[in-house]
Image 1 (tube, rainbow, N blue to C red):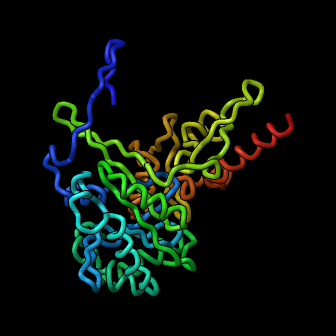
Image 2 (cartoon, rainbow, N blue to C red):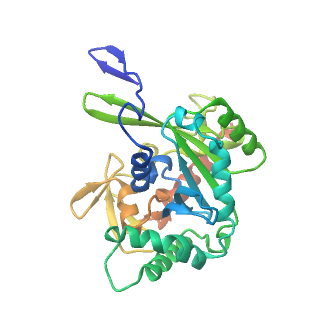
Image 3 (tube, rainbow, N blue to C red):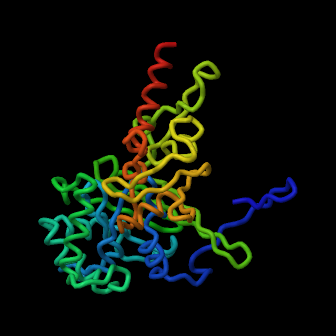
Length: 327
């Protein structure tokens, strides 16, 4: 990271969570409240558990359900030293916990064992009412699965996300091997920087590595200007700013939340204006649906065309690909 001022770039070195006096529980709570730090606008996720204890007395950090119906286990370690100091390998610990989640039979089972106790613990963060924690959990989980079209796929697979500021080579080697054998496990680095009295965190996905299969073709450049193809990973698909540049949407268009009457006005910077206030589209939709993170482009509908932003983006990219192929 660099601080740029008066045409001079000064490199700012990373620090560590231990140097910042952050405990593992601090990072865990940060991600619990901001799981979209390790998601993006192409994913939806619902946090359903924290510090869940299994039958063998193992305790997993965070538990979630994603938009594909997978149960997601998020395991956190503060620094590389914490990983190396463990008697049990970081990735093996996560695999054991994920295996225990494979025994969850259906959404009702998840609610009773994990989600309802989580709601009870953090009841102040949920809407008040006469519903019990079990009833509220069942309603929210059912809505999440239904809206994401994942009801029939619930817990057919489990997903593991490892988070640390750094990793040892053995962990990375093991995760790479697991990926090659179709185990869905991802490693994220959370690298802290301290600038004056402010803490900044850089998020970097390091495994699985991208292959050519993970790329979309970049159609931003005119085929006349350049025939060079650039890649977009699935985590870096074109966003709303590019769509505004393409002209497929424009400032002033009305964006409607999918399946709801709530709407906002698209602004030139990609945010939306709702009830006279400017807010990011992701935050607006996340708060409306009450999920930990949301597939922004799937749940944002362009009112004039009736299409989701995801559909509009896909149609534009397909049309540009056709033009390229004809040249």
